[in-house]
Amino acid sequence: MAYKYRFGTKVRDQTWALEKLAAYRAGRGELPICVHCDQPVQIDQAWDVSHITVPRTFGGKSVGCGHRKCNQDDNTSVVIPAFSKAERVRKFNCGITGPGLGKHPMQGGRRSLLSKTFSHGVQPRLSSKQRHELFLQRRAIMPIEDAGEVSP
Ligand SMILES: [Zn+2]
Image (cartoon, rainbow, N blue to C red; front, side):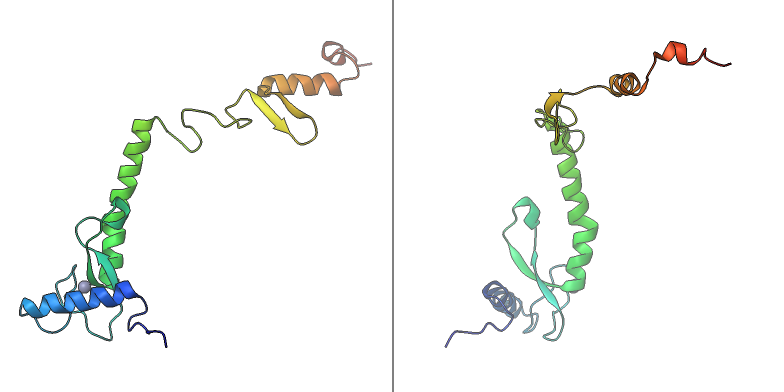
């Protein structure tokens, strides 16, 4: 019969056991200590495996127990803004100033000189002025200059 983990996964079980042992050795009781608020995590409280010094998004490996609410507050107030700032700086240094604005434009994308259409295949991309002039040429039965002068 397969072993059933007490907290759902092996990592959660191991983290709970190690943090419990660390708290016991430190003389702080028999329950793990929350890494955020420094209070014991009760057995009936929701808790998460929380990354301690370096967040997981930056490659952090060291983990501990944290109340779920404390961990979520930490994520929203510290980790997500730090990651967003790091991403902005990375994109700025790579020359990416917007979505799809990297070094090489996508073939047939809006920055490309070619346009791929469903019905007419690959064509040179026209500016909106060129498209409008083409539209007027196709629509007009007579030249545009003459159309304004006709009024009986
Ligand atoms: Zn806490």
